[in-house]
Length: 239
Image 1 (tube, rainbow, N blue to C red):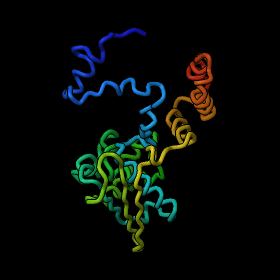
Image 2: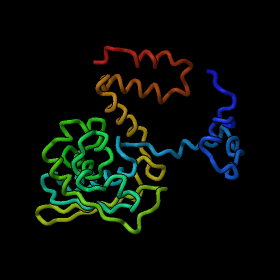
Image 3: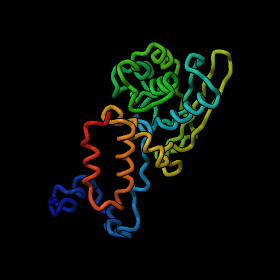
Image 4: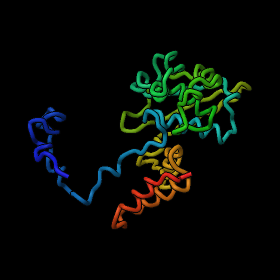
């Protein structure tokens, strides 16, 4: 592959277009411990196809539903304690967030995400279909989700989730997730990532074929050629 030699320092390169304060540049970071230290290991993986700031809230709710054996039909209300900067991102205006009209809008609506998670027991590649967006129970429950500001919430360096649920019989439960699942403080396992991959490609290949592709990707460092991986990806007899 070829490319412009001045893509970093050129007139229209990264530094001039994205880093306006030249005094802030520490160019030695580009080569310091090159090949030994990997910033990519700090990247948070996304277990859910939603706004990253919502993940801990989804985790907290799903934990309560499973541990307390709660169903969506039993829930009277859900209260989320969120950082102030999160309110305009996924909570306000409340009525619009509760009734999103598109999948894109649903992915940034905390009310809808929690309602759909409660009704279907998951947020995955199967979520946000027209059927789920318009599910009567999802729409009803989403309007029972409210958000208040958590004055002790951390900044943008991590995403805390705090959820309280009240049941129609008067019982109340709450759960706090201090770190979002998939972050370096609460990482996903290899098995978690494989499971997400299998679900994501379910419309294109069988679970067996997806598992084979995942294993090949995980062993790339020991593979002399990518031919077998490409063959697995292009096979059309997955089902």
